[in-house]
Amino acid sequence: MAPFEFATPRSLQQAIALLDPEDPDIRPVGGGTAIMLMMKAGVLRPTRLVSLQDVEPEHSRISIGGNGELQIGGLTRLAALEHSQEVREGWPLLARTLRTLSNVRVRNVATLGGNLAHADPHMDMPPVLSALGASVTVTGPAGERTLPVEELATGYYETVLARNELISKVTVPAQAGRPAAYMKVTTRASHDWPALGVAVVLDMQGERIGNASVIVGAATDRPTRLVDAEAILRGALPDAAT
Ligand SMILES: Cc1cc2nc3c(=O)[nH]c(=O)nc-3n(C[C@H](O)[C@H](O)[C@H](O)COP(=O)(O)OP(=O)(O)OC[C@H]3O[C@@H](n4cnc5c(N)ncnc54)[C@H](O)[C@@H]3O)c2cc1C
Image 1 (tube, helix red, strand yellow):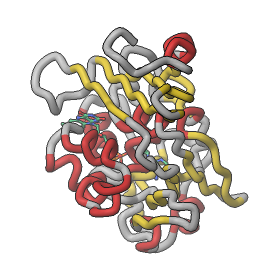
Image 2 (cartoon, helix red, strand yellow):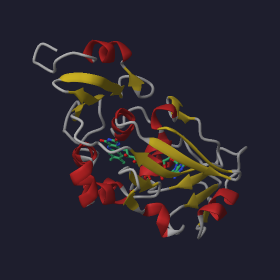
Image 3 (cartoon, helix red, strand yellow):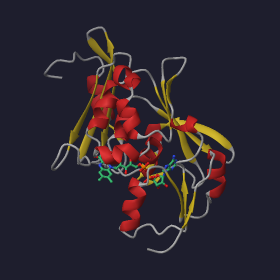
Image 4 (cartoon, helix red, strand yellow):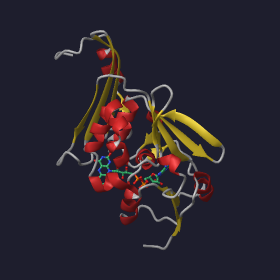
């Protein structure tokens, strides 16, 4: 393995300053679980890794905002999200999904920001967060911008992020009793990478379905909304035939 610099900035702004918008060999590191695999496979040979581990703790916090929305710092570990009482009570779909996302060793170190920025299509959180209507806050040298999680990935391992932008926060609207499910299909164990993932969130209007959000992952190069399926569900009764 070629030698590389390992920077440990103490703030998000310092981390951003150590990144280079023109240089793909300089990368931020959240948990490093995906970076290490890419380095082992020889597809990434970094000259500098910028660790996000020591930046301000506020970027690893989970809190509830004024409108009942879930606010998750971009550096929050997946295990912290999985074990959060607030998440279990208010966003059971997230807690359930995390239980079969990889194994406990990966969840203990992987971060939500790293998970979304990696943009491997074979992942569980992007379709689930997209179906829940989550948004992502991105911080760069010029400040912050916010966009739907659904618009983050542009293709296979590609995102709209500039090389010196970091995912600093993810905001999830209240699940508020909306029926929601994620079906993960794997080729072997239940906690493997998905070969297919389908996330469904329904807004009910009385007994009928109002709006439906249906997002498929893994089978496509990025999470993809199934608009025809959503149109069929709108206004329908959620019975066995539907
Ligand atoms: C054995 C194994 C099994 C797995 N199984 C599953 C599974 O079943 N389902 C599933 O969904 N996933 C699975 N994964 C993938 C896992 O979820 C990801 O590796 C992990 O979420 C990446 O997070 P990280 O913090 O470690 O990212 P890192 O490895 O640190 O970074 C990943 C990418 O994101 C960039 N990055 C990191 N943090 C940020 C940030 N805050 N802002 C912008 N860019 C950033 C990095 O530069 C890099 O390009 C598995 C991984 C392993 C190793």
